[in-house]
Image 1 (cartoon, rainbow, N blue to C red):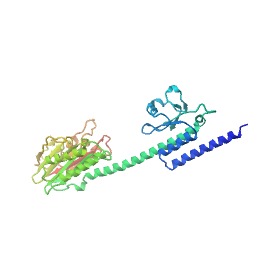
Image 2 (image 1 turned 135 degrees about the horizontal axis):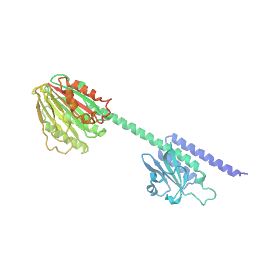
Image 3 (image 1 turned 30 degrees about the vertical axis):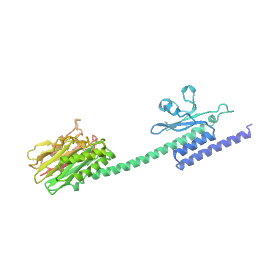
Image 4 (image 1 turned 45 degrees about the horizontal axis):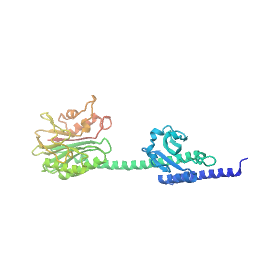
Length: 408
């Protein structure tokens, strides 16, 4: 006949286990932090069940030790989880020859067939009369370990989702910053001797392109296009700083060489050598019909004379802004606009697109579409449509920006 004391002991243990599970569950529901959950877990196993040592390796971004209670510190560094534990799928009594110092039992914790954690248990009292407490309570240890590990993983995923949401908001803010740099269509000259149009498609939320057009006097209009190396928030902030500096410095009479040198100083200071900007800037005086420009390592704009039908590229005349502390030499160039002409400035997101033959289109399509007397706005619209930007071109890999002008 079973002794009455034995039944009472089992009842007492069962009640303890239920109370412990309830306490852990309430703690999880109360959104206690990971440290508090692990402290409760350690207290239950070590001080209530008499387990001497506990160590937990958990996988988050990588495998790491999240609890070491009683094991030597160096054990954490000597165990390669991927290499040494991948074969442990069930509760296992550890043989000494496996080299897990002081470890008696390994309890794997899986979720959807994926290992989340491995619990190491040590210091089994084999001298104690009867069965060791570890062996008697293995199922309970596995259950409470699974509950704790899954809860900690959920905390990590929740915090990660909060971080992703915060990053998303930052990216949205940066995208608004970037878009704000680009002038709206109604802000560009739409009549008179110079008519300007633009197209802007950021490949990601935050692009690195910028173009602008400024009326500098009754007869002089300035315009530019730029592309910052790299992408993301830092690129958007740098370009925002560049735009503010450009607009503050660009006047009807500042030598373009001086403008580029001043911008270079600013970008070198702010980018600390980590980024640079390719930049094309031009100034057109419709009274003198002179177009002067500097190309700082940017893609050569295309210039087309509708009368002579001549086409040429406005090649780079110096290095990019921010590439070096000082730009060695800058060559300003000037074109006399004798007839109704067009100029198309673009970023490499356009010129490096590949055609059906797999070859970069370069300026082939630009020249094809502007070689007529149709306003350049119509030319660009037709070209963008032919390229299927933004919805029907799977080859897009970068921001696509264009600023184009009719010069009369």
